[in-house]
Amino acid sequence: MDSPASLRHADNMSFALQHLVDLALFAHVVELRSFTAAAKQAGMEKSAVSRRMKALERRLGVTLLRRT
Image (spheres, rainbow, N blue to C red):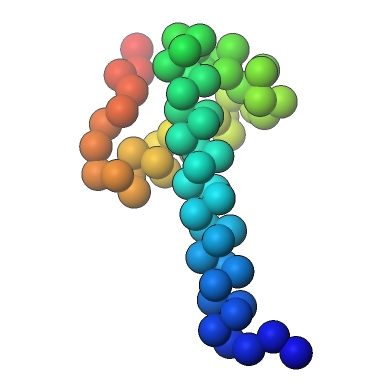
């Protein structure tokens, strides 16, 4: 049986992994200069990419992308 500490560690690793995924997704958006192209490359819906980028910006407390 897992201890509460090991479960927290697993949750933290999952949370950290999501941060890395979001940063990689951000890099794709910047590189491709397009939410649509990044979403297509990642096999995601454009709206999901947009939500992930907004969440990343919220966590970091900065605006990373200018939306037009």
